[in-house]
Length: 336
Ligand code: NAP
Image (cartoon, rainbow, N blue to C red):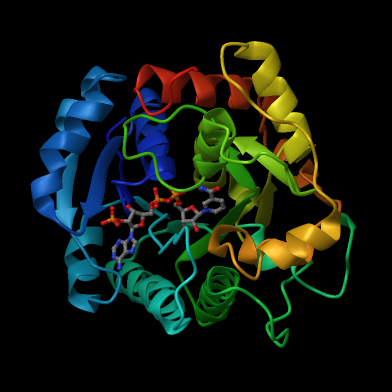
């Protein structure tokens, strides 16, 4: 195969796995980074998993710089737009994440249209699906986060605004668009700068939570997020679809119990704390502020559209175990 896919935000957790998946499938990859001096380290990390990483081409691009995207897309056959701000702690000024998420998506799509790129796969999130008047149940691609809700976190708002902007943009013509909306992404970290989503596993393994909030997440393995991007790129029927990308609803307590069973040397608490205390704690602990609204709620996703294009995700036990093992192997967490 002699096709090149542009992967934006090549330094990130999901993008790294997307690049490996594309290389394994025989594609050439061009990755964007904000700072080109990071390219050798990214290549070295990926080369531990695929010898073809030596051939990855890196280019510089910033979400806010429209010109940088024109150069980045030139000569590519398809694009994964993965880059977006993913803050662990929500900024006081929501525009710090909303503006780059939206403008970056529009800059990328504008450049893709000019260059005649056939298809863009956008990495969105269940964040753009779950926050509406429904408090529980099975959500589908027809569900949207309600932007008129006042208490949306900046991140949730940024993902919703950016995805909406993308769908509006392609109403005016090409490129084709398919969107992947992952839930909580686990699975193996490739490097010690592991991004923000494995923070849940890190905190549980470090015993940072003596009591757990009654929070649950639709979860998915990062390797399956990557394979769904490729199916969304390659499958004709994927155009115009939102693929909710998760394979099971897990309470934090159940994630903790799975870790305890697989890693008995770690002191992991699986005791839950009353819901009212979580809401009080969320006023003081910034990391849980963004989840306070979802305490006790069971929000599941319908992944049938993804399965209908051939997606076969791993069990979440594997995502938890391989994610935790990678954090141990990288020296990020230690038993005792
Ligand atoms: P990550 O590791 O933090 O990666 C984010 C990437 O975006 C990094 O490469 C970062 O580059 C890049 N980026 C941020 N601001 C940028 C800017 N102004 N210009 C250019 N690049 C910029 O996060 P991730 O977990 O892999 O997330 C990747 C995507 O998946 C995001 O769109 C996120 O919303 C989505 N997602 C993630 C999860 C999850 O659980 N992880 C769930 C659903 C959706 P730098 O390295 O230069 O900062």
